[in-house]
Length: 337
Image 1 (spheres, rainbow, N blue to C red):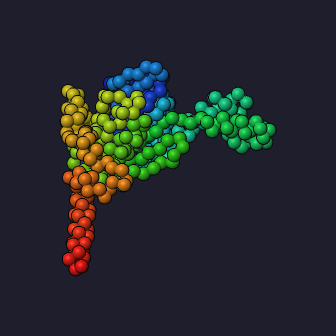
Image 2 (spheres, helix red, strand yellow):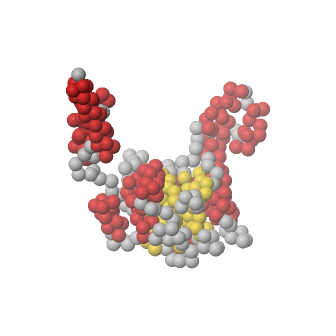
Image 3 (cartoon, rainbow, N blue to C red):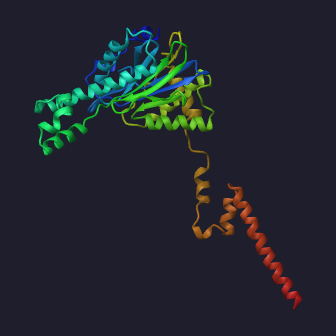
């Protein structure tokens, strides 16, 4: 159901372009594990040029699973998807998410090997299998080392999140690329890929720690946190401003954020109420909190700090009590004489 509906969207996919694309894609489980929120940008870059609102970065894969893609070799993504589909489409029973993720991982490695053969090994009359099995025998040590070093420099710049539901309606998230065997993010409940992933994950882990964000929250709240993470990720180079957001569920039609500037409404609410901002008076307060290490027990300094920090007030009371006690002892001593 998800595949047939998403495939009708008019937006082109990465494989329609000869490009490199650096991006952010986010997936988060929601509503007591009934839904998955998917958020991405839609920007592509062509060396010195780029275009926003150009591509869709999540596409149907198999059954109720979609795949989100980020990386510099996006034009190779559909080739990999097609090989995975051909391998698993007629499998009975339906492939599990782990089988799909493993197939995607292996096809990524296969695509990387094709690049290695085309750029390096074919020049020496080898293919990947021949070089791996007989390279040491056919080459001098120096030549083998040079070829092996050149091969090590080549990678496939593609990261994938597989998101969707099994036949029981259980949601799943998997991550993989050509170097990383599939990783399971079902328990965490969210993940992000692309050049903006670090900022996005920082935003979402902050929400977990301080804003009660989890896969059990309602769909709207989880989608908000995913979109907020995407807005934060826009600080990364080549992450576009346009936001593509969709919610998928088991045996449900996908729901998209309103095309009538629904994403802009969420962005404006985030800017005015949710985005990190400078608290009123924080600059002056921090200046009051700054002191030379020799001044930490200075009464005037502590008086300023105590306006913000109760422990400083307690220390100020201690110092003044100590001074009063010394004064009393001194006066008592004089009286005794």
